[in-house]
Image 1 (cartoon, rainbow, N blue to C red):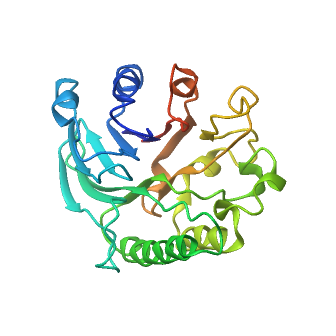
Image 2 (cartoon, rainbow, N blue to C red):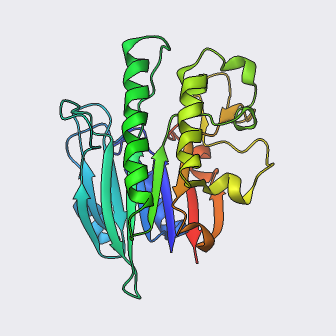
Length: 259
């Protein structure tokens, strides 16, 4: 099973980009983030062979999951704060051709900038809620795959120049420690599991200063696998192709394959 994740930075602006990606890579499941609109083009993707679920929000945020396999929506908000109305979380159960049920969660974790503000505190609180949810999933019988835009630069190796990010919310010690807490629960970073020493491997490049062509980026889009799913991890790759297209998203897709 191949699962991909992509922050598209507006589904309306990038509809054809996503369509080309689906036709080129044929993932079984695609997680999308930052939809930026209340209307999701479910019928368009249905014509391409994908059913979908989406949580939308006017002008901001928004997450969706497309699937060629049967899916059941089981959660549209991260538990722990009933007052949080941001469209950042979607949980489905995917049924594989052999009848196995796998939990797939798509997230768009808060950016949190500027560090030290209420936005940063919201980010940390959101991560604490996610850690609590992962602890529950770890002990559940259904294997779990969580992916999306985590807005976390886990290690120095995950950015082109650490000195440029030391004041950024994505690079703060509190942010990175919470990501490590998820790993200590047993959820493995799929990319680093297979590519522990790879440098220059990024999923986001700013639109300015020719960042993409100069490969001045960061790795902030991740897949975490529960302990029961980790032995089946066979591939995790970053597809730079969509970032090189005309008027692209500032992110590019990441793909994971499970045996």
